[in-house]
Length: 319
Ligand SMILES: Cc1cc2nc3c(=O)[nH]c(=O)nc-3n(C[C@H](O)[C@H](O)[C@H](O)COP(=O)(O)OP(=O)(O)OC[C@H]3O[C@@H](n4cnc5c(N)ncnc54)[C@H](O)[C@@H]3O)c2cc1C
Image (cartoon, rainbow, N blue to C red):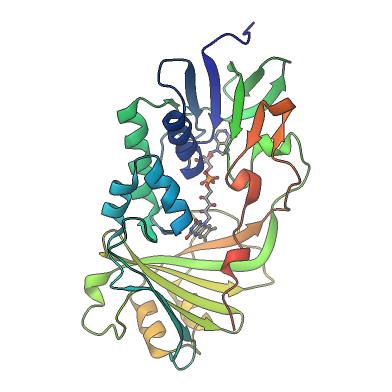
């Protein structure tokens, strides 16, 4: 039976953005003399993200720079042309407010391609030997054994750790051991797509590619990713219909997006015409706020969407 002796074993459940950031942060801030051993247990057969954009705000970018991945982050995020984002009216396209950004700042807003960002984190974990990365390890149960925690996996295997970090996303198994709440439909869904910026260059009317058109009960967000080669599009719609299965692989049809946004400015309508015929379709779920994220006398902690999913709160950009 493990004791309080070193090395101290940390098990991170979930190898998404949260899990890999946690591995790099713990490794960065702790002694590298072998006294801390980190394992990441991912349920999927590979460490992979979907092809969509992710806006990394300045506070998150600050932490990423602190753990030594800032240079690579800036490399994959591209440039903003002095404008972080321009908010516009949905019908006329007229400016509501434009938010400037100083692109010369080392630490800045960083819009990235999710898959490129995850792969960057993965490479840093590997290069630094920060953690052992496991695949096909779906954690189904934790057993508090007093001085340590036993992790049980769907394949019938078990392991132990002194500290478990639950980064297993919005449907967290780890959270469900301590809370009986479920993800709740937020009343919003979105269509997502990527359009090559070279296809838009000849007619795009704005100084920047980061634009959000705000309308009643919907908004249309675009920002460039992949070193300004792709325009990431997220078209948000309020809908009482939560029949869309929550999935990162569900798709809709471009004609649905066209219909939803038919009252929007011509730039929006033209941009939609460049979207893939089958854009991905996400319903947006929320979770109740927890009053505690730490359990098992400090041996189990929740992080990321498992602790505080935020899908709808920060997407309420409507007029
Ligand atoms: C439409 C949309 C747009 C968004 N845009 C932004 C944005 O621009 N900026 C931003 O900061 N945030 C954004 N977010 C939120 C952001 O995507 C999430 O907060 C973030 O991805 C959460 O990371 P995570 O690692 O906690 O969870 P996830 O990314 O869900 O990763 C969880 C990982 O755990 C694995 N896993 C699950 N269960 C188990 C298990 N039992 N055992 C082992 N492994 C398991 C999964 O396979 C996955 O790899 C957006 C969210 C949505 C829905």
